[in-house]
Image (tube, rainbow, N blue to C red; front, top):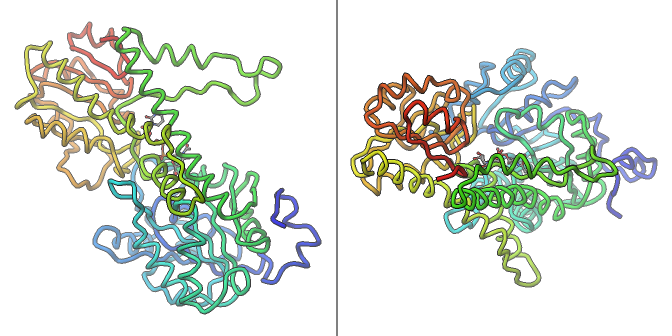
Length: 475
Ligand code: SAJ
């Protein structure tokens, strides 16, 4: 009998069913993977009285520096991240949080959270190299009675078919009997990492009641919203469906944007009107019926471009019969096409300005995939840059937040726009909305402005003499 409602987690029958230590016995927590998910989770648990947290991070060329940075109480995550820097400084000073690359730290851990990256390749196939390696190291070192929780997003079926067998083989223990195992997904977003962990409901899927109970008890310490226990597979499916739902909604908005461009109306006005539809007339304040998303220059991040493929992979690999997720896959294709649509808008704008793409200097504003963040994972800026290069244009990338990126970029806006034939806005960083367009125009060679995020007012730009093209704007 699996838990259905959170309340039962403290019921008498439950206490009797407890084979392992109740949560208040938890002392030592390990968090594997010091990234956008692992760091805020580790710091929040380290701030709980009596908890001691050790982060484990590979000393890789790309991320190894985070170990020393964090142990100095410094926040390695750039961009605007409310509350995170203070929290990290406090728990490191308190001595309840430190980071190492040594997996033997798992030997006396009560709880181990796994927060490693689970990327997919260009065919949508997941690559679990680091997940498998970490499961091996955790299995090798964990003790009987440990609670292992996978927080990384995976294809449905992965926890039971990949992680569990590795943990059991390496530890000689069996899940549910000698150790607890659960999958509980994160809902973090850059710019509100702490807020989304603390103030969003949490779904916890246990391999058995005991595992769900222990995981619910644990998260209660940092999650201030309802915690829903369920089984592992249902939780895995919920995560990828949750993000796929958003991706499909964005694809709908992007398709409507193209329709509006052709019809000559402003999609953002249409969106506003559509979203005014009152919810359920008898109770207008209840859950909204219409929430048309924002069309734009593309969909980036570690989640939305990947999770639909994880969903498909899970069904293709562990499903009992074949199902072709047409809506899901077509939506992915529409969203992946938006950076190319930006090139079409640019080509049209340059033609109107008496220019052409070949040898045109194009200032691309925004490398991060999300506004006011430094996160460049799967950013739509990359396919846009490559498409422009292919057409022999001269794109110059600019971003105020990003630290490092696989393509050359500048933090100097003048370097990017001086002598440019066109500006393309991809990421709606606040500083771009505050730009003095009149001044900017004086530095450019031609005055073409392509707006991928409805950041500027078409009429005002045209009054300033720009040739303005925007996603979802009349052409
Ligand atoms: N985007 C649009 N139109 C929109 C919303 C977003 O084009 O209306 C674009 C953004 O510009 C960005 C991409 O989509 O390029 C992703 O944006 P996001 O706001 O979804 O940000 P993520 O990917 O960091 O966060 C998502 C969230 N998932 C959902 O809201 C269902 C977050 O809750 C998850 O925790 C996160 O994925 C994750 O880690 O899975």
